[in-house]
Length: 482
Image (cartoon, rainbow, N blue to C red; front, side, top):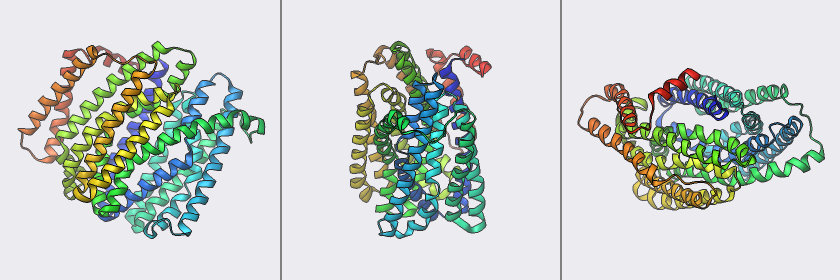
């Protein structure tokens, strides 16, 4: 099995496990806490996730890229790990200090302060864990990082739900989140020490590697924060202009819409370090093949999951979240349209980031963020969560258009229309047939979720086998390899 396939399979396995955990976690959570509490939970995490991303300083991407470029030099890789750990702890201390001052002077709204104090415990250890993950990703041993990541998630879900059920509500959930990072951070460092001889880095090592790590991380941070705001700005603005109940409704649309990114996000996570390695070897032809293959499988996955969820939006919300969340069905369908285009963008962006086009992609993401905020500020007060869905969808589409524009100017080959048009028509044929079948059939929500997904899978595979985009022989061959 090729290295890239091993990486994709490792990341796929980890993300699949985390997805299954999330699928079990959310419906239990919304039945333990009230809809208003769930909206507050969502808004606090939306804000904290952006803060935590700032605190990390883009070091996860910087570490995995730079280690991938020096993967054969054990001494250099060890120095990079040491320098990255020191920088991550420093960033964490600065971030905690800034947050503490912000709360003491009243910048943070009072209803969030008690929760933020609990979450601050996670910051330094979350930074350390990002270096641990980046280290193993850079070595193309992603399976180690994913095992730790899944273990942390299981710890958080089990302890958090238990504490919430016992009456500790959101405080219990946030405490479990922070403690999970303390545990996995300590375990991660212990495991890294078995593979790297690292210690407090010398000033010479910091001068040699610190600037490279911090600089690339800084550029990644610009795009990362813009992307995080792009994901979370609509949630925060719904909370600001509307209510926690509206935020809960909107998040019930966001959660399943983002699930259709599953395969593109796996490919995205694998591409950066592998592209960096190919770029260092000046192997542009292999990068072109990698992009085309990534686009193909991303669109296939986005079509399968996106069309299925679009057709079954209302039954899904009814069964998964409960009857109080069905009102978000129209918003969910809007967001699926946008997330389809955003999912495709996620495949090509890491290729640009690993090959010197990082400033261009970050600028494009920042532009999409500004458009998203502007549209949401205008639309949410008037149209509520539907307005948020419209604004976010438009910004996702424009981000896709912008990244395709970068692709045309980059040294990489753009997939031809001769290949693209028949491919898109095949996916369109599946969408039309499946949507027609669902629309003319009237059955209960639970029964529809039991019947239509397997029917859709068979229909999807059948159409793509006929058009030649899916090979049953290759599927069985890959399964046998795994």
